[in-house]
Every structure is written in structure tokens, then in C-alpha cells.
Length: 286
Image (cartoon, rainbow, N blue to C red; front, side, top):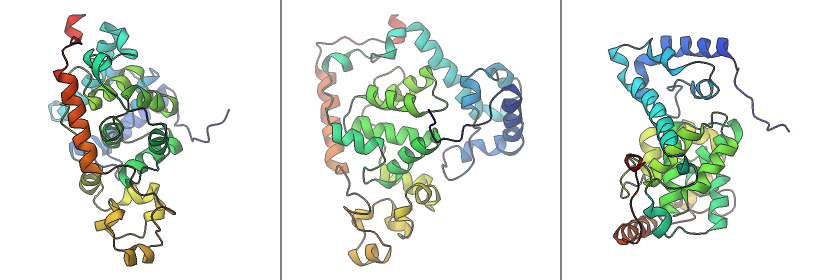
């Protein structure tokens, strides 16, 4: 069955060709460019690594001390592989077991569907989710933003998001995807603190400052001024009309309010941590 996605070139030769391109033109600026979804600042090696077309050690052998930023990312990949090896149960279970015994995730089918189809009303989130469906890939910075939005702003179980990613990602690696989701949801080893919640508005303003990425994937907002692109609900009606935007029609209203949703998440996570009925589990307990 055709997915409609243009699959990347495959094979060892293609992997080395892509690595040579990145090594020559992107590695030196990786630390600055890796967080910018509007730039070709990542290695795009993830699908090659996932299918074993190139070995991580082959890449590591070509790095110098100046390339520590990229080396860390390769190490994270291998770390998550080892976590999954040590704790195969984490495929379906939170590494911190308290989340499965005490966390009250929200069962909201409509909110999940809006997230999955890029209709949350938060342009930076919607851009990422639409890119995922169109390309089978999403920039890593945006992956973290959409994952935190689902698990914290919407308080939906991380496993639902993880499975959605695996259904759509061309580079879907079980260990890396699982580790990334558990990091974002604060359920895993060395996870983000539960009170760390990425704001989808400020994340867009910081990492897509000119709006190039967001306008590409959310073209119905392409005529909005930069200052309102990531928060169209604050845009004056006349400016919305001039940009051809009708909230609730051509583009949805936000499905949550950020401040109350953040407070709800903090309350839920804190309540879970104070509930001692569950016991903490980590990779070190295996």
C-alpha cells in the first residue's frame, strides 16, 4: 500500500554519500543549526542508522574533538538501545513504574486526533505533526515540542504518541523513539524534570523566528505577521481578515489554554509523585 511519502535513498552507498555531504557542509555548524527546523542543520542519518546501512562506530571514527555535540547525539542513541536491552519491558511500560500505577492520564480521543492531524490550534505543533504525515520524518526539536504538548499540555499517555510516531516515522527506531518519548513525558531514565514543559509558542518564536518552517506546513497562516504567527488567537480581527484567516474555520482555535493546562499537568505530576503506592523503577534496578 502506497503511503504517498517520497522515501529517502537507501543502502550503504547512499548512507556514506549522505554522511560525506553532512561532514563537509553541516557538521561544523551542527551545534548552532541542529535546533532550527527551518534549516538543513541535522545529519539526516537516522534512517540509515536505523536500517544498519552504516554503523555508529564508522561515524564516530570520523569525528574530532570539535564534533562533541554530534558525538553526544550518537551516544544518546546507543544509550537508549542499551536501556531497551536492559529493560525490554519499557517497550510498553514506564521506566519509572509510579507513572503506570499512579498517574492519571486523560482519555481524550478528540484531543489526540487533533494532535495527530495537526489541528491543535498551535501552529508550531501543527507544523510538526503535518510534516510527520507528509514526509514520515520530523525535526528533533519539534519532536520534543509535540511530545511534551501531548503528554503535558493534553496529559495524554506517552504510549499513544509513541505508537503514532512508530506508525509514521521512516526512521522509527524502537529504542530511540521510546527513549525520546519517555524523556519528554518525564517517565524514563535521565528524563526531563516533570516541571519542564516546553511552551509551543515561545519554542516556535525561538527556533523558527522567521516562521519559514511553520508557514511551509501551515500555509493557511502564511500571511500572518511574524508577531502573531505562533499565537493567532491574539491577532486583531482586522489583521486576521487581511491574512485570510478565520479562526474556527480556516484554522482551529487552540484546543487548550496553555496556562491552565500547565497548571493541570504540574498538579497531576506532583500528585503522582506524592502517591507512594507505586515504587520507582530505573535501569539500575534491572
